[in-house]
Picture (cartoon, rainbow, N blue to C red):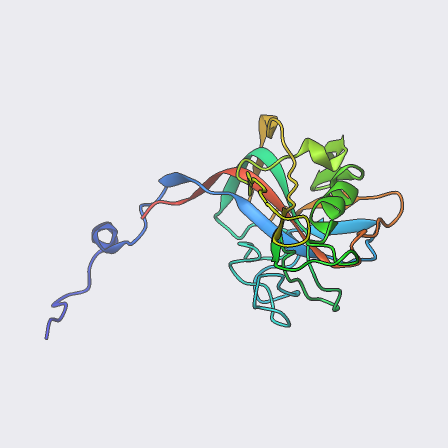
Length: 241
């Protein structure tokens, strides 16, 4: 058993620190938050206000539970805990169509279907996979609010395409007019990611919110709930260890 034979002096305590005083490190890390987009829509959606352990998760298989890592990496409501700083360099919006309308529940929309013996009244796949994204992203506006004022207001929401997204290339082939129908439907926002120029620094305990606003509630054409997330990409600064 090891024991300290004498009490270390204040000058000697530096050798026992797990943090290096006055030194910080920066890492590439986004701030992200996902919320449910109910089929009836809403006039305002607020992001980064419900941290882990609060709100309702929209992660697959996590219905009726609170938010976790798959929903957000916020640890506090509407602000960063001390001593965390975040330099926001770009903003992205992710939107995913769903396939259920149950309250507070998200289940992904099917993007591929095969029907061995289709009928005239049977659609091989829901058009909601494309129509819902069109309804959500073609309108609305984004407001990045920090402290007591807005630092960005832009419209429409399609202005904020994600850097990483689901892309599907497909081919359809059949030698029969009545059997073997294959369908793939997908949609995505494209274009140049929206850069914050100059970047914006979020400081500890400073309140901030990203709002997606609509003049009127925009319902999803499919009748199903969707999932929408906002990504504040950039660099996170913390105490060096």
